[in-house]
Image 1 (spheres, one colour):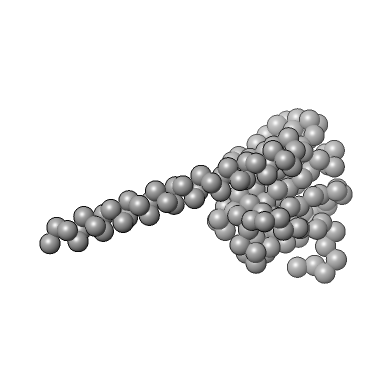
Image 2 (cartoon, rainbow, N blue to C red):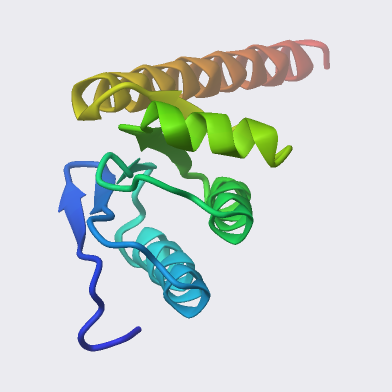
Length: 145
């Protein structure tokens, strides 16, 4: 991880907050991707809010990097929500044919945070349901001797 990374990654409860305030060249975008993934691993964060409200343009490389970062984060059991996308950025991504496939978006940080909290609750209830089914199967197996 770079000592003087220009993009701070802050921890907020179970989530990370990344606010991109400068235009990123390709190497910086790759470094940010690596930094985000390392911080997810270090902190066991369950979600990442990436605020791009200060960006007026996103090129094809940055769009792909965001989508790839989201896919990589999901393998670490974290979800990424991109917040604050300017209309011009959304238009550019569509025109470039770069849908952010599977990446959730929100208008602002508040809505992004709510999305991540809802997602955590859904995962917890799914996990609880699986555990209850497993316990029922174990009880059935032990009673059939």
